[in-house]
Length: 355
Image 1 (cartoon, one colour):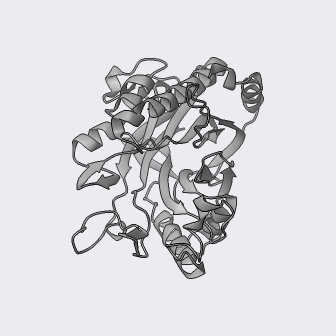
Image 2 (spheres, helix red, strand yellow):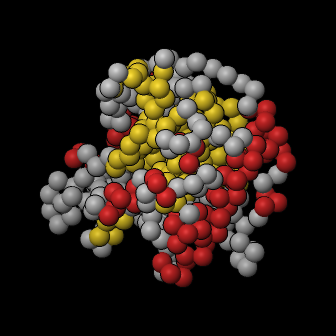
Image 3 (cartoon, helix red, strand yellow):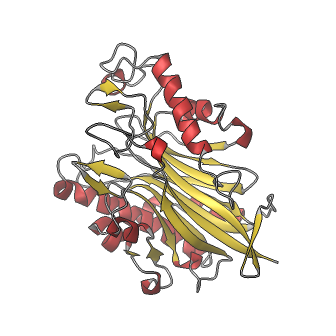
């Protein structure tokens, strides 16, 4: 797999290091210190398909003639719902929303174009990074970013190749390098292989995906040892599963992280009973955002991890019935429920001390 990380990837990163920028600041004070805070979010948009069948049997389900009767009314309602959810990702320290939002389960760039133009968020002027993946279902990952808070420098996409499964196709991993607060940061957006066929049986595929993510990170750090790195996505595993805890090596506690390593702030969240996805009545936290050592207090980056949260706001949850408290999804039991997603968004906050 290391051959996948081509010399062109490294060369592009070197070129990206030459650029600079000074985005608009929203500063806050704490204990006599002044900070600029950036939101970094992830949201699985749950089958954000358009209504056109252009992928044969894999796309028929989400078309007017398919079993879900996916028509314009349902599509535009979902766009409105998702844009509203994103519009609520504001805080007193991030009044214009996240700097970047990683997304998954999107069919193509056109659905993202419709999303960022929706009335709830069009004034944010979110920009899009997208790449068509080989996934059989036709779903991709992408990145939305606010150009006032994040300057895109370089994008690379990395394919997961499983030697003993030559016909296996899944989502590519997207690495976006940019400037946040004038500091270089890499955002790696993932949607690791599903648990189809069983959690244990499918685990090697997610472990392979984690190994690819680790290789991308190693290449980034080889170019710039001080690079801040954020790994995000629907990993289809919990923080304690082998792919995250062993292959990637993301730790539960900050003090256990060493140079080159990773901290997973969502591990403790799950231990506290907070999840982003629910299956058979039990919460999982598949939607993780993991930071590298450089973003921790002892790390060399001026950007520092501050806190993490699952955005489990009441409007995103079922308010009554058998599934009260579950994510309010688009379909339930085959019936259209006019919801948001079967996953909840997650977000971390990164701060930079300013003079």
